[in-house]
Length: 153
Picture (tube, rainbow, N blue to C red):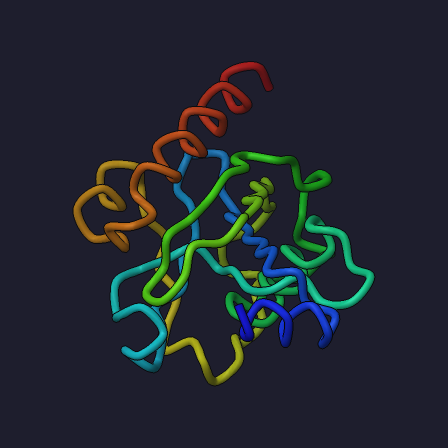
């Protein structure tokens, strides 16, 4: 209970946001952490906390910039909500929104910050095998929506 009060007093609600950039061929970009203490070394959704007055979409884009090197100029469209729910992490369960965004060029990314060891473009099948296990169900739903988006495009 004390942790909850501290988080609220610091202006942090516990809400997380993530982003999954994807290409027209259906592959999506994931971050591999440089520190195993942050969930291991499996590819994972670029995500983090929603700061201050940010909405979840703005926080997701910011996390993409930080953890993946996402450039806003490389986004082909506005990010859209791919999944919203509760994620159980290493030490907590928290609400999270995951956005997906079509990008124009798989090479038009900046160098991610130091918390990312590397990034990986993965298909659905590859993520199911190599991705962070706690995120496979989430990404199944996100990949379903990506496939519908690309089919309708």
